Length: 294
Image (cartoon, rainbow, N blue to C red; front, top):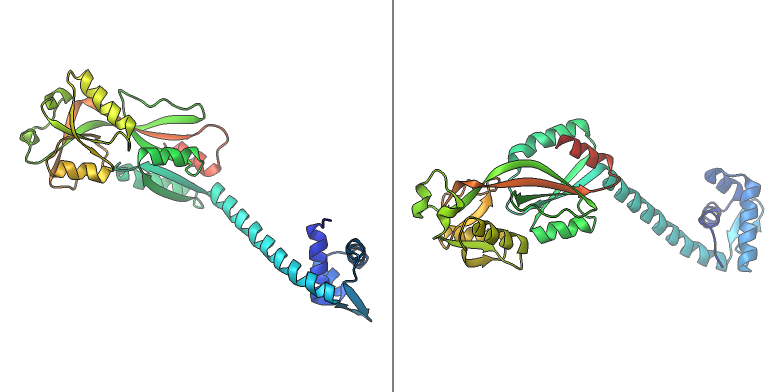
């Protein structure tokens, strides 16, 4: 046995008004149509829901039970519909962007945000930082509309068929070393000049790609890197550099410029791309606006 939402709403409104004429006016339907629906509901259930009392109708015990249950059910349905509509509104008018942990994007982001708000004042931007595994997992799950990451230009990431890859910017690589390191006085370095240094790297479990790329880049420069510490987070990596445990290879667009214990020395032979990924296929208006600004 099943009932339409319309039949449920008709019954609840008649029960609330205790008058078919008044209920029909509130429901914007004809009185005969409403009376027919109530009669059909009673036949389908095999019980009397109302007792007629002149111009008014009164709920029977069965009607009171049904009114209580269906009133609550309809309220829950209405709340659910509003939540779904709000979710869809946020999806079409909002954009969630995952940003690689440790990346510094503030220099160009402020102007970018201003322009976005000018073109699409109703768009809401949500930003979240995370490690490489996290932002890709959330992106592939559909929670992020775009992700912003950093990739060594020599070793670009293989692009999944379902994604679009866009290089938004390019910057030099830098060696992050403790300020007491003898190399800290150089204005620039090459990767081969670091052959005698100890290295700290993001761990193979945290960032297998980053670990592999460091080793391969050093091999192309003619040496095997001596990785003495593997960090489980970007903040731990920087802590090792601060303590003089080893050097780290990063893109220049990182957030370490204010750290007085660390020198960031440009590497002449290393460049990093700031890369934005989004899904191929139909895009929301908000995402299309963002892409147009890249």
